[in-house]
Image (cartoon, rainbow, N blue to C red; front, side, top):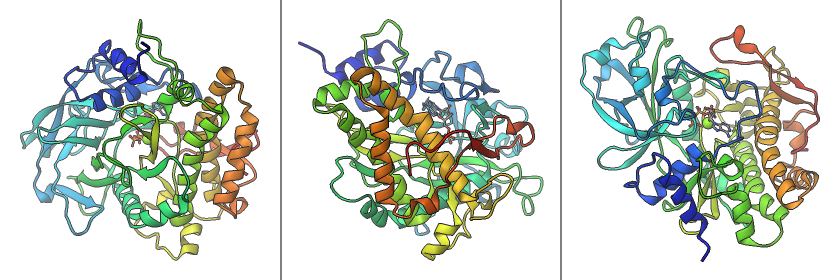
Length: 446
Ligand SMILES: Nc1ncnc2c1ncn2[C@@H]1O[C@H](COP(=O)(O)OP(=O)(O)OP(=O)(O)O)[C@@H](O)[C@H]1O
Ligand SMILES: [Mg+2]
């Protein structure tokens, strides 16, 4: 008898350090996050860069799971700032600290930590390495952590106060507009939409200058365990794990999950790929954009497919990581205030050095580069090789769907394609790269 995909994935998990005692759903999720990303990050010379992180916490160097020593600090109110998506229920969460961060001698504001005890917990890193999953003795939790002066791909992964507050404000906005967003995704779609909220955050104040300066603040974020809008028993698998190769050596051969599932489903591979992965991403992206002006970055790690716990067939598609840009022009048109957001992430129509065509440079970057070149191209190449599907046919379907879901799409997208400048960090170590014109035409959108 042939083994099911799920059985084979679990047998692969047995060959890793994912503990056997974990619930099946968590083992499958960790397989997807940590061991099915082979050849998915080949899109940029930056994507394999990891600097400043101890080898034992680097998920790309055969780490032993779980990681020990996640710290939980209960701190006095005067040492911290808090934010939550819900005004009604002020958050009571602790500050969570990654062990790599805790050991850094240049960690800012650490003296207050030294005055307080903390309980060490085991935890599991996810693909971004700073979002982690763990059981706190009562429940499973997802938390996003500060990594002190650790560079992963293009960015230093410090989780500063402004960014943290911004992520919660975007989450607040999503929660408020959720029904309209779901409505705008439209009926008849097999894959149900959802998103993970960054629900609450705790920031350690800058002890040197707490009232004036927020520079040096850092903190942790609590992320919803399951995406808003989707049933809790589905299994989350990042989109890249559907086109990535297994990195488990000597394992039962597992082909990329999208190929396995397409064969399992039968029918037309082009329609399977479009209906299961591409259309849900486009529907959710356009629904969020036209309802709130939020410009999500739907790359292979920020999109999570929620899968049937028996067949692993995707039933939901959710976005994570609400540290997004926003179109001020769209928000003004919708009559929505933009005051709450980190102004670095707000873009109007005006041109600047960083954003040559304002917000439209950013819609191009996230759709043409992050979604198109860095994600959809991988899916399309895989289905061209495996099933002879023509990438041009998929691109035509995606362009048509964008035009239908966002009727004035030429107003919101530029004619040109923008991507990150090759080496902007030399000038701006702390993160705001320039976008520049790429020498290509848009392929996946009008
Ligand atoms: N296939 C992939 N595509 C994109 N990023 C990937 C992929 N596999 C792993 N990653 C990692 O995911 C992270 C993507 O960066 P991004 O800024 O979206 O996430 P983050 O803010 O660190 O965390 P999170 O998405 O959990 O909130 C990087 O650390 C990158 O190395
Ligand atoms: Mg991310």
